Length: 112
Length: 113
Image 1 (cartoon, each protein chain N blue to C red):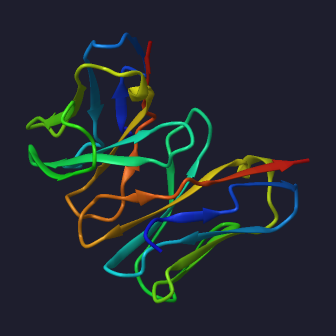
Image 2 (image 1 turned 60 degrees about the vertical axis):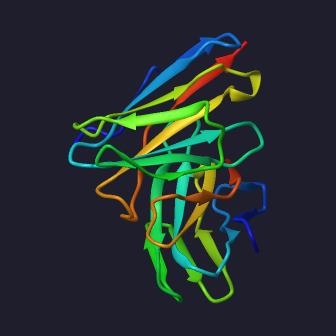
Image 3 (image 1 turned 90 degrees about the vertical axis):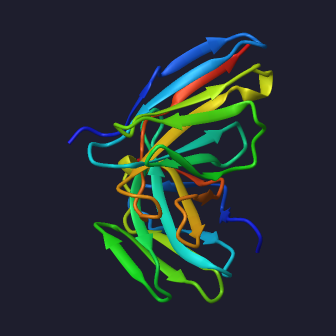
């Protein structure tokens, strides 16, 4: 993997469904993996920053896992709500630089 | 605590003109990074400034430049605008260079006609 890749590109679920997305990133020189939620007309909001292999983080109904050896991270949303509708971005940085390399995002739409 | 602010929020320019965008980081944050988003592309890193010095630069032509002031506010300049420069420009601030957590502003939407 040379770039940060996210799948699926978009997802449409119903309220109450649980869902998950995938982020693949280069595993060499890995430093940190970031997840952001980006709602239309707002600023990207930081969800998680993960650095250690096997890391699991949770914020309410949203959780994320990290596998730095194989270069992937999963984001899970339990019991999706309409307010979860947004684009979810992952980004990695290598070394200690602040430069983030972003994926193109997963666009989630949650309907009633 | 006020978040990252960017001005202006929207801008329309014509080809060949130049433009300056401004970013004020969260109080106490000393690192500012700039990103460009065009339709169908992920956010692309432009450059990072810390203590008035450019620390990293992305793969953009020399028409894109920036600077940072002693109060950590940053400006980004694009000269000789091209149609392809139409994009959303986001800045992000963090406590210090290399610090993991970055906070984004709402962006400046630039349209080049």
